[in-house]
Length: 247
Image (cartoon, rainbow, N blue to C red; front, side, top):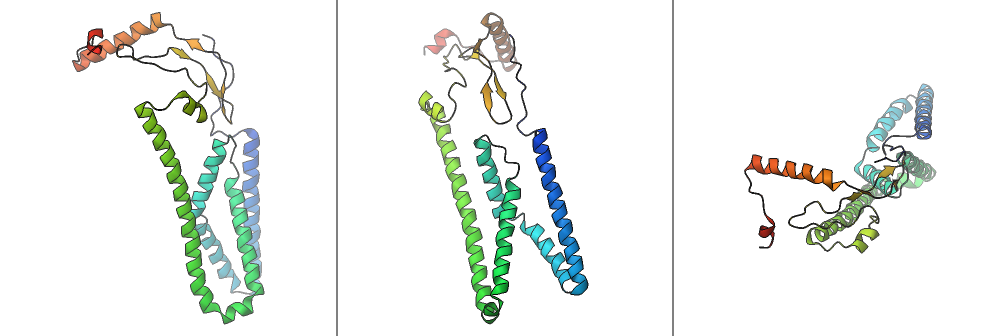
């Protein structure tokens, strides 16, 4: 049997262009971080209070970056893009840029409205804490609901599979059209279809790269029977006969 010459690529291995993109992102992050540290030192020489505040803000930002709601949204977005045959190599970067942009914009608004906030600070502290908890907690509940719905769909498919209700039409709707031929087994034939074909991964999706091949049952069946006889002998199991299947 001649195998297809298409190269099978590991889906988690980055291409050369993707490596360059990732390295450029890390370089940009390193440059931005270095500039921020330098700016903190420079401002700290003029106003000493800004030096510890800068260090505190940076460390708290690092901790805030691994909050559960951040991990959930990045993880779910990555999974969705993978399902769409896309390469989500910069999901976390764009999320962090969008999040930090909102934070900087809010800080600007706070500076502009500082006088109003100073006169109403106690109310802002109380209401802001409650609002922040509601937003973060609500987001996590939404993500949990989405994941539960996905799990429920998987469970329904599993149940239909176990009860024999998963027909070809449903398999086609799930994206399994043409993956394999229908399999039919009997009491005396547990092998089912002896046909198969090769699928190769091109880095984004699976492609059919060969025609259907039929196994040589004259070679395969004696090997299966020998393995079954050995298993039955080792486990001291009596082999079932075709007559048993009629009962």
